Length: 242
Image (cartoon, rainbow, N blue to C red; front, side, top):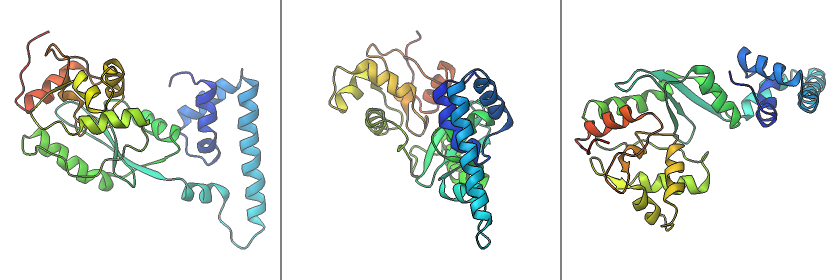
């Protein structure tokens, strides 16, 4: 795991206290706090508070431990790893709907992503299965639209505007970054639109692969251009070679 910043450590303190971090993340926190006194104090305060509240709870009538009570209050996100024609995908679903499709990566990255956003990750293939089914139909050329809920609540307001406009691009059609900027009422924000699409948490379903440069060439893609070409080919779209 990459070296954590102070902000990364502070964001993970609640998950650390309730025991929701994997050993790799705990080791990264210990490595950071070995040389950062401020973060070491924050981690120590969190652990001390949890210990004190657990002792108080133990004096009550069969009160569950603090860790269990906190976990029950923290919203969870179900996830699963599935194979696809464009490689392995990690798919996550919140109570509101699909919230993440990640190309490749690892389970540790998936759980870190959730913990950093105040979510409790839980492997749950059954919860993810309806979304996987629609993705497989799309890859097989049997589905042109997705009709399951999408949760964009974790994205900043500007990015959400961009993604909502992008979601309206029909199957097999293209728009440019400039088109999207105009659609959200910010015609001068072409570069910002590109950056927002680069952080699209639910590619394929919110079809940022249908957004190209103004000159008609393919542009960029977070998952890699090979995947973008593959998705466009599924939809029967051809572009000039770059």
